[in-house]
Amino acid sequence: MFRSPARLYRALAIAEAITWTILIAAIIARAVGAPGIVVTVGGGIHGFIFLAYAATAILVALNQRWHLGVAALAVVSAVIPYATIPTEIWLHRTGRLDGEWRLEPGDDPRDRRWVDRLMRWFLRRPWVLAVLLAVGIVALYVILLLVGPPGGK
Image (tube, rainbow, N blue to C red; front, side, top):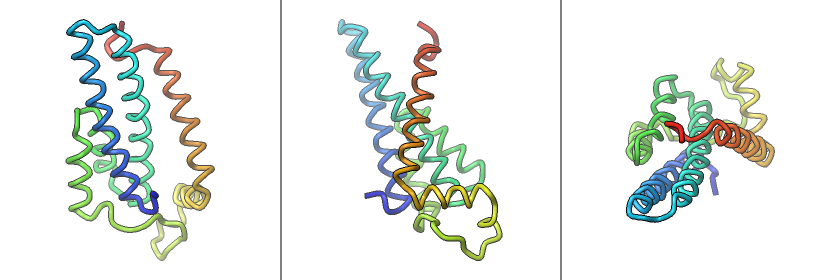
């Protein structure tokens, strides 16, 4: 399903935008009388997908060798409602999502860096990578839930 960085990134960019809709709808629903739990649920869904999108953006940025500014833009685009969609379109149109997963080292000297070797090791073991990312995202999500919502209660 996610045989290329572009497909994975697009899926999470769209999911992140959809969860913005869920969160905004929940806030509107609460404003017109729905119980506050709708925002808790909508915010929880959005928060989890936000973290998954950020992890995906970082993974794709490493694979595609984006400059730090491009990687930061990809991650920060999730903070602005629906901005992941135009960001994905821009990344696609500028060729930054072209290519496959870098499973084997190439001629580029950067392929000898420890971070590239580690990334390739995980990419060759997608289930290990998926479990590690899921555990990391869930752990961060739980920590953020314990800290509390943005802006306080």
